[in-house]
Length: 239
Image 1: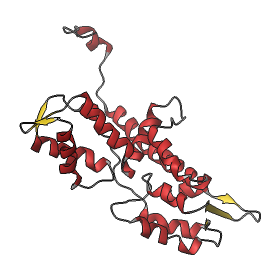
Image 2: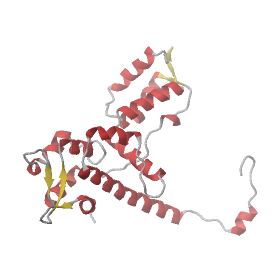
Image 3: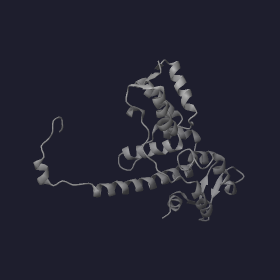
Image 4: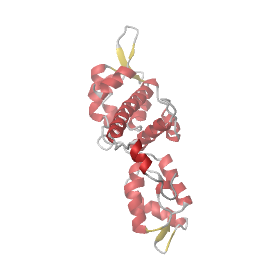
């Protein structure tokens, strides 16, 4: 079944007459979804996303979205790869040339934030002020890694927020989702039940795909018989 239909099944609620709809209590709900990875923000501006709900907006500022109107929003839905969240701790602690470090910023850090590539030189300039760049080389140490983490946590891109939610889900016990630091940050939007339900339904759908892919990978992984295992001797430094 289509992902938007699946989300509708989980998020739509009946009114007093039994008619189903998804209710957004205000524009903050739309902002919540836009900034949580539900919308493809590379192709759609926030204004175009909000404008798409104009016909569903009521005088009190709420949005009552009916089934057909909800399915129309599929064109905004992000359906690309999710990938793993960038972790600055994975970077090697050593000296980097300014050119090398700018490449890391442009390829790894900045795409995970709300900034654009024009921000790279400014970030390097800030490190120069803190004497982390001397004679053209930048010393990437724990302090710099912590600074990079601070940027990621304060200014995450919608895709990174989605990546962090998936990571939290996979690290959780059972099916309980652990609320990450980024989830706390998103609560500033004061999103209502409808927006939270949609975000959770979307996460559930992504996890179904991930689990299928993991199961398929496990079924095609090479196996080793007990006989072959007995022939193998442990190498040095291995358990």
